[in-house]
Image 1: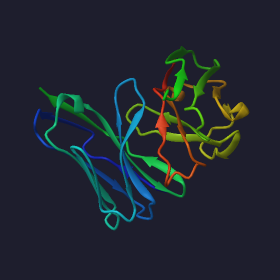
Image 2: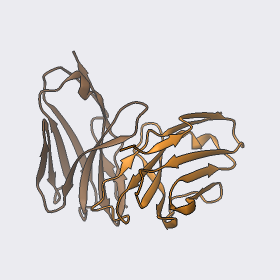
Image 3: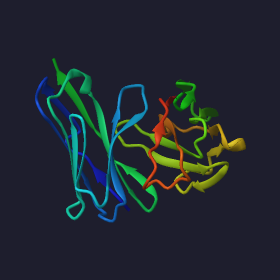
Length: 110
Length: 117
């Protein structure tokens, strides 16, 4: 059974600092890995999707890397802003199922 | 393009009562998902529909939970009777393809927050 872990559970940084969010998974036989953002009272928004054959994916200030062999992914958010405050979840796909981590709640202080 | 709609947004009930949630996916999306997200955890898939057929309901507690998707459009998730441990946010998502999660992007609704007292 796939287990997805995100550490730390919460993170607080001053505005302008770069954010580094970690995700680890136990079964490396994945199709892809996705990073989502969840705002309070709202659903999940897909940020980045990395196919299993890719090493990284970039969108604006966001960059996600994937190391399948070690079962790790990292989401980097450059020059954080208060609007980046949210919970970030990673999810992996294998056996046609999406398995989520519990998320890292980020607070960016102005 | 309108997003995934869910109602109600909040519901408070007492244990052993019944409750139903409604979801209207993005127009034209073939696949619909229901997830349960308990506080402090990631979402867990309860059931996946492709059009109006069930693709995966392996994690649905069938003794108390039921779901249907009539006419392959909107869907209802029901809990009867509710237990304290059912307190969670119930998320509905839809995707345009045929449920091949390794290629499809899922679009999530805002969720229904259920509190069971």
